[in-house]
Amino acid sequence: MPFPIQEGDVLEFMRELLAVDAGREESNFDSVELLLELVHQHGLYPHILTIDCGVNEPEFEADGRTLLQFGANNYLSLSEHPLVKAAAMRAVEQFGVGPGGSRLMSGNVAIVEEAERRISRLTGMEDCLTFPTGYMANVTVFQTVMNPFVGRLPYRTQDGSIFMDEYVHGSISDGCRLSGARVIRFKHDNLDDLKAKLDENEWASNKLIVTEGVYCLEGEIIDIPSYIALAREYGAKLMVDDAHAVGVIGPRGGGSPDYHDCADGIDILMGCMDKAMGGTGGYLCGSKTLVDFLRIAASSSVLSSALPCSMAGAMIAAIDLIEGAHELRAGLAEKSEYLRSGLQRQGLTILGYDRIPSVPLLVGDEEAGMAFAHLLLERGIFCPVMRWPAVPIGKARLRLSLMARHDYTQIDRLIEACGEVGRELGVALG
Ligand SMILES: Cc1ncc(COP(=O)(O)O)c(C=O)c1O
Image 1 (cartoon, protein in one colour):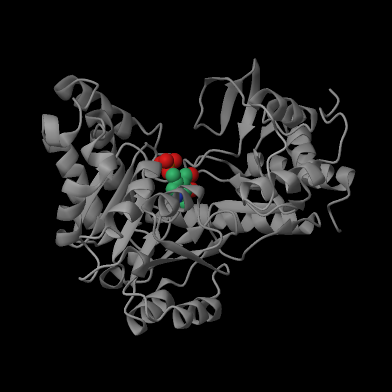
Image 2: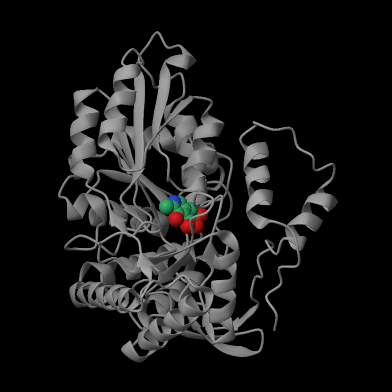
């Protein structure tokens, strides 16, 4: 099967998209039809698999084939765990399938409140509010906390400033934009740059720093205590998106606050239930006052349906397993080290140094990135390529996700296939 790029300079086209997106250039795309045609012509339209069964399994069926799965975030393999599935089914029997509507309208279901108490206990935070997705938590939180009622009074909107790591997830940038607050980007995990930006904006009265606990596309665990110290020095609040940390790091799997023993220094902890927790949903944790305020002011909660009860039940069972999953976490860290070093021995470039289950293999330009994923698929291995706007242009990468149920034979197959493809495309140095 030939790789589907036909003609045209992909990089140039992407730079044009970037310039339009950043508002530096007027859009030449007169219609959505034209834009779509160009996206297809440059081979940039993603091929999304139709999965017949086993989406979260190490091997799954898609497009009539059996493939090895290295794209799913089901790090601890809890999605298909019998106890988690049974808990979801019990909750369906007891509460039905739908949440009944927004909780202000139809009430708080006991099992959802229990899941929130369990998330608070897992993370070590005081209180918690759940949402049906992590995206919903991130799009609502900035609008709510940068809201005029919360900042120091008398409040002027322009006094509110969010200091955002340049590599945060798109749901955070969407949320920041929606809040209408000033957004100041600092260089990725660069405390000197953050400090300089805080100095330049010392006059701002309502400052919020936002970063992630684990950057899965960079292979990094972030030193959150340094951010806490800086936030305290400048009288700023700190928010940590722990989507890829919860379940994976910390002695009881509680993510960044547990790993660094720093729950009391984090003002807002956001997390996702669709990664190591194996389900779906998002949460915001913080002080009781903050969460009480979110309950009445966060539009994603007030104006939208709550987390389904089946998911709440499943997540309570997942947390029971996470708290005792010491060996599973240690085994996953070992597999991550094995994959990293195996790929490096093949001459490939792996980003970051930390033993976390997402291993980013840097390919470089977008065409090579897409070709890499395509050639892996031809060898029966699925892993999507991450490219702009998820990562900077010219730094496309494969984010290889490990799950507890991957065995070493499957990981060896991945290492060998990546080595072969890397040499074929000229991106393996060794
Ligand atoms: C760091 C981060 N935050 C937030 C989200 C959004 O979470 P969800 O998929 O639950 O909407 C994601 C999703 O991948 C993520 O990686």
